[in-house]
Image (tube, rainbow, N blue to C red):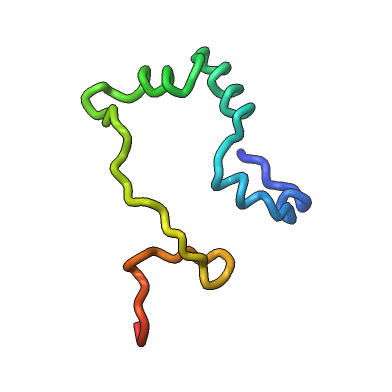
Length: 85
């Protein structure tokens, strides 16, 4: 059975960020150490079959320089519209 979070953990304003940003460098290294693996690259090489690896950078569009209309709202270029939904 999993342990429920404490009240102080529930009140932690940074819990959402930590949960969604993932482990920090020290936590990543601890996980790799527990697996006996030296790096994330080595982990990928051991777990992802070569036939499905991309082996090149993704061809992504540049990031938007627009500022959000309000905090927490990202603006996607070309995806905004005016008028009724």
